[in-house]
Image (cartoon, rainbow, N blue to C red; front, side, top):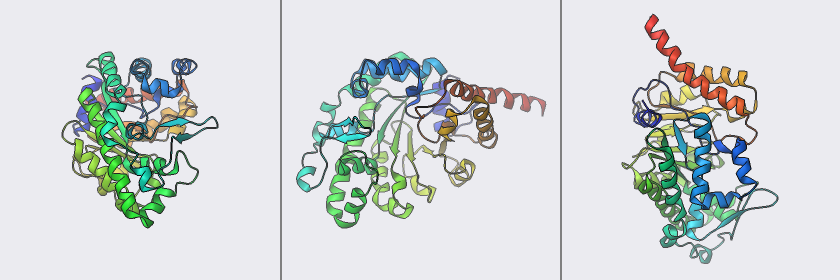
Amino acid sequence: MTGRERFLAACRCRTVDRPPIWLMRQAGRALPEYRALRQRYSFLDLVRTPELAAEVTLQPVRRFGFDAAILFSDILVANEGLGQGYRFRDEGGIAMDFAVKSARDLERLEVARVRERLAYLPAAVRCVREGLGDQTALLGFAGAPWTLANFALEGGSAEVWERAKRLWFEEPALYEALLERLTRAVTEVLRMQIEAGVDAVQVFDSLAGELPAGTYAEAGLPWLQEVVRSVAGRVPVIVFARGYHGDWSRLIGPGVSVVGVDWQVELPEVAARLPAAVGVQGNLDPFLLTLGPAVVRSEAGRLLGVMGGRPGWIFNLGHGVPPAARLDSMEALVQTVREFAGTVSADRLSS
């Protein structure tokens, strides 16, 4: 079974010889080959140049042989597609070209030009697809409307995310109008990637934990579910709401194939609450990759021990790869998951 076949089987909750491996976004940024590129090109250059985006996407697959690759891109390309560009501040963090502060600002967001502005995105997918062949799955992704609304309203990164919450309570009509435009843009971003050849897509609601679970169910989740419904049935859809630890069944709307889980909860407990037909992805603490291989092997082994028999489990970190991740620890992680298959097979033969 190829990595691509293994990944897609897990998304459909079929038993596979071992859980497929991929490490969410940013798996490449700990690699020396990526850092060499960054000395020559800015992050946005890499995102917006299809050949460079493809090269960065393929680097971790070449080194570690993951079962799935995720397109090198950024969640804020949806905002860029609407006409709200972004850049990286010299002091760190993101700055949007402007903040949405009024209905007049909202009118500057043009859904009709998303495909035109983001033509580099499907071009990058096609480059990666050619490089991967049929052995490795390719995932596309997008940010969820709630998370993107926070960046749009704050004008970039913020120490405290409050403008979206304030707008939700105080100006619900303007809030809904903004979320509707973002939802349409995110849907277009995902459709472009699907049309270009990705095998599955993931929607990241990275700021879901900024709201209490009950409020998120009203202020963020409906738009995430609308995005999923808009692309459901074409490829498997993974949803990841970082920091959401409420009623997990709420995340499983029509079209959701897999639920991603962050590292702050016990994965077996979450998996037990999900329907058998829904896959689960996660959730090793990313921090562990900054420690030595022995710690990584131990913690990964523990997770494999309690989750390895669950059909539809995709081994992953509970969030992105940290910049300080150690290569030897990443290698130890991949080796541990691969060795798990041989151990399980031997146990079955001896029993």
